[in-house]
Length: 339
Ligand code: ATP
Image (cartoon, rainbow, N blue to C red; front, side):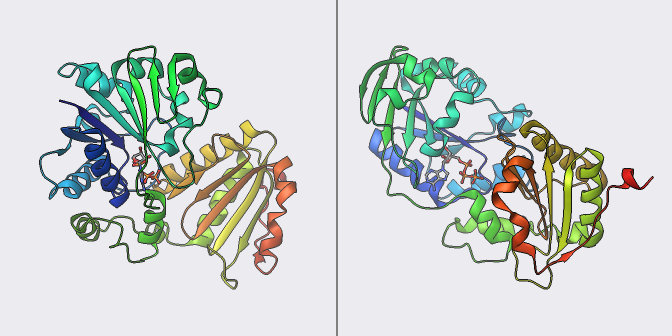
């Protein structure tokens, strides 16, 4: 009995996920796939959105009409905290042999695997199935493999890698669907129709529970919010903080802030501190945050306010303020300098 484990945020579950599970099940002759929603992805910062229990519920709705070969497992939600796949695999190993266990991930996660906890252990306790994803190519040589995987290769045969651990890695080509949770969340917030991409039951659940709404209602006065965020950036020694009212322009947000850090580390910590201050004062996380790992250009999205925090050296390259020439400069000032 070959068993698949398909982990993810499933925020929300979509047809890309279902397509992948269905094809892998068939192509590899698995008898079952467990869909395992994570409580908290250790490599992602918290963002606004459904509670873990709601993602679990949506996952159940997504597979409800698909028969008993697809099952949703709440092991990571029950465990709480950071969801490390190795812990989950070890639980499954109590009843399933390593050679029969298949961890399924999309090719977009391939490079990231190196940062996963105990990757070697993972590749000892289970086989790995990597599915195609638009924009990501399968590796073509041993040299191009992530270091830990490279060190474990026994035999490399393009779509099949035999590992020294006794397990293997297989690459499976899907009829790719260009869908991602990130894009769908954006569509949902903007009130766009997503029925083509999301199972019906999930869509109804999202509507009934008013999930993925814009943050507007909770933030209220965005001008005040923009000033609040600017002050928080000044307090943490951000430089060149500028805020613009873009309501007279056609821009992706009504307000924007651009600020700089003096190093990549300072830049990332400015964004993280901002998130914490907003959480404290307004009780919410951003809709999305990108670029914190590198700390070169971090974008924190609060809906009608988008905050760009740059490593100053990188900011010079983009001259991003030129985009907002038609906006109103709110002339935000560092309160500590006024004293
Ligand atoms: P996000 O955009 O929020 O990161 P996501 O849509 O990539 O979300 P996850 O829940 O993070 O979805 O992914 C769960 C698993 O599903 C991952 O292994 C991912 O690679 C895979 N996956 C996600 N979307 C697709 C897709 N369209 N086709 C194939 N696999 C996918």
